[in-house]
Image 1 (cartoon, rainbow, N blue to C red):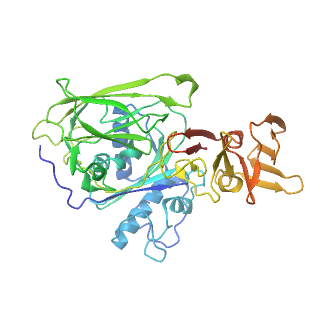
Image 2: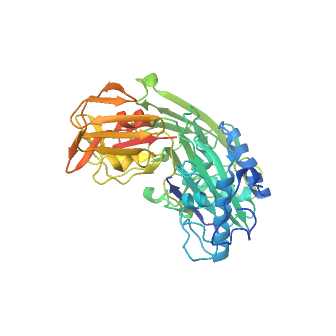
Length: 448
């Protein structure tokens, strides 16, 4: 099977913390919608059905359409169409402007701040149908993430002409589902991935222009991301050489040569979850197989796709549930912190003191929708989130959660006029979940 070149296919992907008809979104002041009255377009319903078919085949839970995410998606696809432009950001003053970023566009149509957190957006510009747009996005490496993440719970879809916009919400809920793609038993899988179609190009670091069709693996655990024990074998049991990459919670495997037509491949991955007592000292395994398209077959995500996807696009790291979404130059004196998949900029930075991670007080808890109060006379910090009140005193190892005394391993302190509190205790006390990525020195916070 010859790999078709991407000729007018441009994709885009964006991470954010955090329409109906083609003419409805042209207002400079979009009207907030009432979710009960929202009428989803035929294209949105078709996209939902196709995405859920793929997720079901891949062993993942179904997602549902959200009216605010859909209206925001429709508004943006109308903006792109009206201005003949591309990208995730809108420019105020241009026709159809409804907010600079996806989170802004969700808020302006009536979505709440909780919904506007943990969003991702993918865009395809030349799909002849919603199905073709989805196949192209999933056929790439990084762009498939929101479609196949175990944590994706709700989506919004906008489609006008050949432009497709999807905004996805990551729930952050616990899950035991493992995402593999191609999924176990999948047939008619394309044989080739062209790296130049995606930006950043996943293959450039390996010095090749094309590889076998991208294989992805997403476990719902924090892993040691420096090494992985994996094999890919062909139908005769021969090892297939490949490059591997850890990217935002996913392992991506790129075989060094395109896959063969009509061949069954078996992928086996051994991995050790970190920081989970039930898996301490255990090695888990996931093994699955898929079969490539025969000569002349067009392949696709579920077979019967008229245009085999070969990748494409501009991409930033996707949200990744319980694993770190971002890597960087972090260390014990400059600890990275992510909240619901988004890297938080902290000045001064978080740091490790006596084996515990401490964070500057106001830089994190505001993003966790918490109120922070400071009593200078008592040197006391009060953190309030909904019905939970946490009190900590500088220099004291005794803290209080709703009046109940808790003993800390290390006391809060002040350094260079910044108040530092223990990350794990303070975050978990207000109901957030905290995990630690030792390899990258990143604290991962998930909050509903």
